[in-house]
Length: 133
Image 1 (cartoon, rainbow, N blue to C red):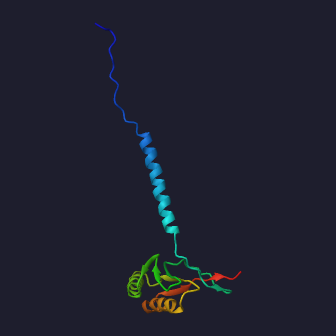
Image 2: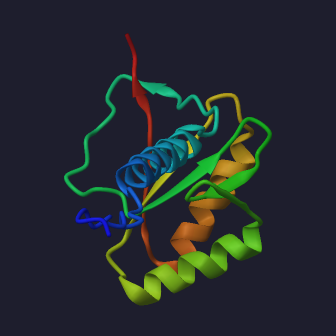
Image 3: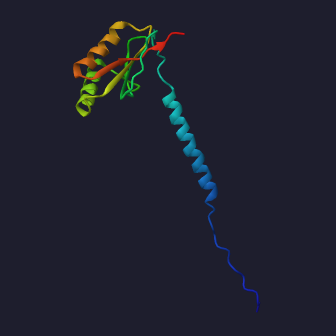
């Protein structure tokens, strides 16, 4: 008989590497999401010497690109869908300010159509311009 009792080693799972990998994946997904948001429309606002600064932050952003396509909060929409979305926003908050970002090379008809849609639902439109150098 042996006086030494052999101890069985417990099978432990080391979770530290798993946590490290999960943290790296979470950071990667967060950064990838930020880069997806950073990929914006290539809109160059027109220049104005007397561009004003609003005291309110824009609640809704509408973009009009060079081809006249309309984007509501970064998603392309048709004129009819734009009016429906704006009517819903106006029903939620009638003091919502709408920031219209139109490319300086775009057709004015698309930008005027967006202004008209904003005015129909009773929201406050504001055009984004850049200052001249």
